[in-house]
Image (tube, rainbow, N blue to C red; front, side):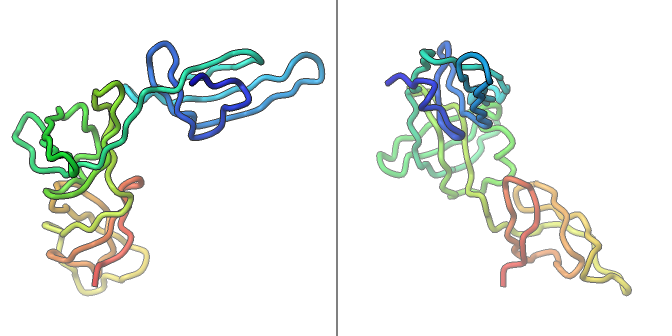
Length: 187
């Protein structure tokens, strides 16, 4: 299916010259003189580059062949991350480069969403909120307060976040994976 200028909106996935993009910014411009047009910023699913493009009336772009699958993260074998399709039990291996920065939030057995373009994995998404155990953090000292100040903490996945002083080593915390920030201590 081809999208016309009037179909474009923020969040829409389009394909231009064989590359799938997600529209991250959309602006409809209607100048006083001349025809209206749409100016968009699109982020590539392949490399994360942002492309600015202007669409005029009559311009078309294609719908990409994208599939999203829920897969279970099994383990990292040193070179590749191993995933299993939760429906077909088919296993795939993705390189560190394909998985990207989300690897620091993944734990064995976690269900992740993998996006495929023409049957090739192009991105991995983890849940927005995950619960992880703190494996290392400095001890508290007398005079530390629970408001305002923060200290670094290493999580079970190796990621480092800032946490309040009242949270201790061994505690489980909720983390926002998009921002990489502490949300709360799990009771």
